[in-house]
Length: 112
Length: 115
Image (cartoon, rainbow over all chains, first blue to last red; front, side, top):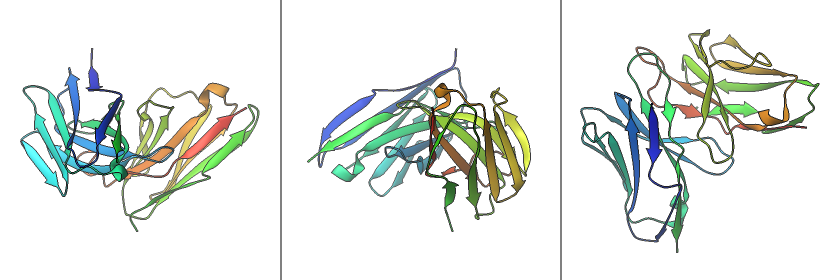
């Protein structure tokens, strides 16, 4: 069966450390993978998109990797801040006219 | 304008009421979506409109009725809902083209409570 798993429901880290979130999938063949941030009671906000032929993508303090052999994406936030506390969703983006499929998300808490 | 605007932000309705959720974007996006999200769950796709035509209906009960009057507007008409339909309803848009998803822009959502 098809599954998307984000490593843990919740992750607590100390301010200044690097947060690493994991997204694993089975029985999907995404052409792209997207990461979103969602704050409580608000809509998701797009962060980064990475293509299947890209190994790594960076944007300011964010870094995403995509390993299609391992069927895994890692999402890193370096020098984390309390303002980074939110739920982070990965989304698989297939070929053609197929909508995004979202993972359940990881709730990140950055402690000062 | 890079926003997707949803109204109302909150809605409480009885099981016999009829109400509508509204969504508007002025980014020229040609794909618009309705998602339903329950607490601590991922967004679940309900409907997709591509170039103002309904292209995907994820087996949603007929008490939810979508409408796309023009390329900037998306409505979701609600009738005879059940308490389990209480959720955050999210509208999103994306540029469309060869594939539906590039980056999706989400609205702030409508928090719906059915009593």
